[in-house]
Image 1 (cartoon, rainbow, N blue to C red):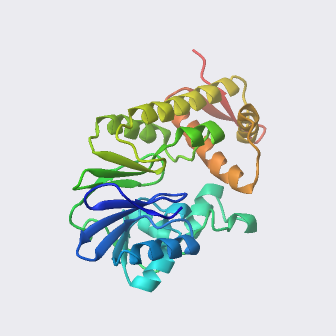
Image 2 (image 1 turned 30 degrees about the horizontal axis):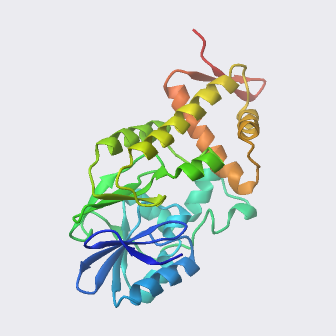
Image 3 (image 1 turned 180 degrees about the horizontal axis):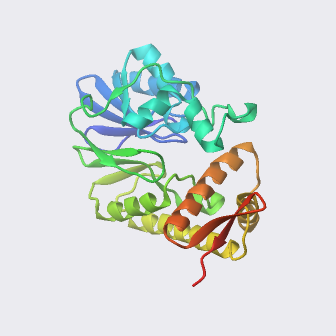
Length: 294
């Protein structure tokens, strides 16, 4: 774990719970792609890079989930590197209470103010368009998070962030976090047309061909959407729908799962509502979701 593995002429990655990209800009300078989930991950990443005689001059955050930005503060404090992403992701990296607040839908209670949902805040960020190191190209990957991006390196290595999850993760957890199901599916369609020598998702081994993994991810999203329609054959509250979904997949509810899966289920409900497959009505001061019947 945390070993540095070469993927291309200029591109490397650090194998960890969230894969971290390393792109050699030139000379001793490197750019990180994400920074791990916490200070300790940041420490290990910095150690692996400096052991090669390299210096971190910048970090590109693909998005601001805690497991992708958790090492920012430590690495930036030690190296003075620039940290950059898309505008909204930069805001979430600087103000990390926003993630747990968005997931919960209000001020998060104490158990939700943890490093899994709320990374240590990044001290300073900058715009990516004007600061992206030469040799890297932004790829828009909407769906999983607010404005997630990936990066294509000029040596043919493509860093895919959380646009694809491993088959093992999907089999174990079934419901992976997403913000916009429609955009996630559109991103999968785009990825089928994308060409690269090697693809590096954040939560999967590098792959030369991602089509099979795309199919696995797409099938699970469509399966969950269909299941929610079936659950809502009779009018039900969000809480009831969430319970039935957990029961169906044999999942265990806890504080983190309640907000992560709960937020994702709300996104699925919005997706089905916008597609005209579900409706939301109020009865006796309770919001009920139900399938649209012809």
